[in-house]
Structures are given as structure tokens and as C-alpha cells.
Image (cartoon, rainbow, N blue to C red; front, side):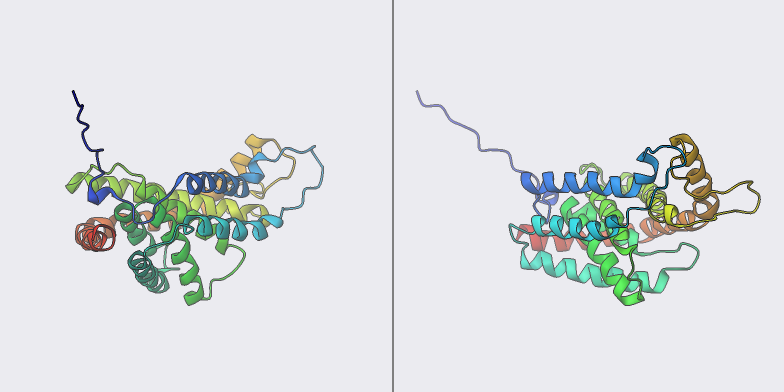
Length: 274
């Protein structure tokens, strides 16, 4: 008696990622993420003898671009469909323009809401690529190229990646609510990471209303440096730039999210399903 086998279940078309992340790419991405986190958090992780001089590891500034290039090369090794590449280029250009017209005004940054929506629709691999390319292109447009750029690219890539990893089945108003919450968390997390990337290099930080320096203290206990950094980021950006970024994300996602998601999903069906 012959046995029949049901065909393997296929993922719904809308759930397919525009950029396939295979096992090797996932491992590379995970290692790069862990390495990148170490680059950001080294001031809080480094333990030295009190009083010993610690020079900031400027080599991280050189290593991070190499790490990004390796990850991008690995993710595109299997080839990226020309139509997906065209969408990536178009969204990168739009994001570069959006950042150019909005950056620098009380934390109003329009670059993140489109990154979040695109990562949501096209998947985590696409979101990671778009985060990198958007910040790189916008830096060229706004003359914002500097040692901070690789850190901005990686942090933005994580924002796009995380949006692509959100639950796929959520739709409608619940989806918009979920994306708003994610946009708020991403806004503050991005600000926290960027503060952490520059904090060790800024000396003599003193803020009105707070006694003592908030600068990085090499060799100091973890809790002391954590407190210094916490107060520093709270007083310098959490209530201003980061909140402005979170409000911008929330308003843009609520006002434009449904229409942009519908447009991106039509594009997704054409470039991924057809």
C-alpha cells in the first residue's frame, strides 16, 4: 500500500524576506552584532587597575567599517535580485533626502520611520541593508562623514533588522500600535548607543545643576561609570533629541504608516513573489 505525503508547507508570500539570510549569513551577522556591541560598550566593560592610564581604542573606528563590509558582502553573496536592489536604492535615496531636510532640528529625524516600515515589510536582511545604506548615503548628502558614521550605520542597521523580526501575523491597528512602540524604543536606543560611542572621547563634561564631572573615568568601578553615563545621556539627549526622534517616529507611523505599508507591500509582491 503506497503512502501519500502532503507537500511541504510554504510560507505565505507576504512573509517572505526580500533578502534571504542563510545560516552562514546569520552566523556572520550574529558575530558582527556581538562585536559591534563590544565596540559600543567597551567603556563599561573594561576593567583596569585604578589610576592606570587607558587610551581610547581608536582601532575600533577602523575595525567597524571592515566588519560592516564583511557582513554586507556575506549577505549579498547569494546575489540580490535586481528588483530588490532597485527598491533598496530607491528607499535609500528617499531616506537620504528625508534625513537631509529633517536632521538637526530638535531631534526631528524622518529617516527612521521609513526604515522601520521597510524593514517590517521586506524582512530583517533588507532592513539591515537599508539601515546601512540610508545612513551612508545621507552622510554624503549632508557632509556628515566622520568617525561616527560606522557607528550610526550599524545602529541604524539594527533598527531595520529589529523591525523585520517583529511578529508577522499582526495586522491593522495592532500593527500600527506595535510599530509605534518599536519606533519609540528604537529612537531612545539609537540615542543611547550614539551617546555611548562618543562619551569616552569627550573630556571635562560638566552640566549645570549637576555636581562633578560626567566624563568617562578609566579604571573606575562599573557602577560609577554607569552612573556618569546615565546622568550624561539623561541630561544631554534623552529629554530633547531622543524624545524628538521618538515623537517624530510615532507621528509619522500613525499618520503615514497605513498608506506607506500598503505601498511597500504592493512593491514587495512584485519584487519577491512575481
